[in-house]
Image (cartoon, helix red, strand yellow):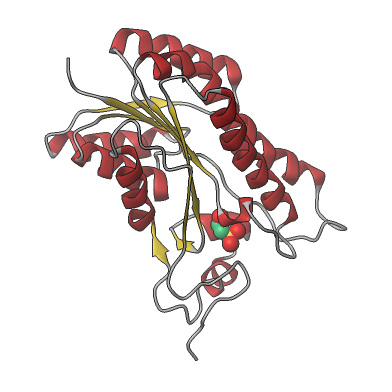
Length: 253
Ligand code: 8X3
């Protein structure tokens, strides 16, 4: 029973799936949660075939009763050492003046309340296990940009959860680690933001030699998690070399 367990939200694609692969390789039993059953089943199959232990569990982190039921399900599966709050995303690029409040609400629900639900539900287990809470925020959690208001507001919310929780739990045997990625090219992030417009989504990365990959970010998560338990990486900002700020991106012609 020495196997450690990591719960990953949004494990169906992108940074979540890459993190599941990294943590499985680091020896964790991974619990893959996401809304899309086919995707987490496929990933669990891949990891199991590679000799790892992976448990898929369909979960919408915005649904509090479902999150509580998930926490009860975990009672039969031993301690939980790591929670990776990865589920999140951006919708739209409208200005503050023109944005649809419904989009803002959706982004707040998943990026902020989703993280809150999961953290509240699993925190007793994580403290018991001398565990780690990872909050995947974003460089959008640290500075704003035009057209990003709703997402930036939500990611600032995620950032504040991490900072506040670390203060409130100081002295408890649990780490609160925030990872704030900049430009990462994943299959879905920009596509969701641009409501399925493939050309606009692709243009985000135009001329950028090497945006980060999901695995680059997963690598930083696995690194932070595998430091000795007394070492808390408070906040790790990770961007591609071609990006110096939310605004300043080097693009080749
Ligand atoms: C993603 C980074 O620049 O699209 O979280 O806000 S950005």
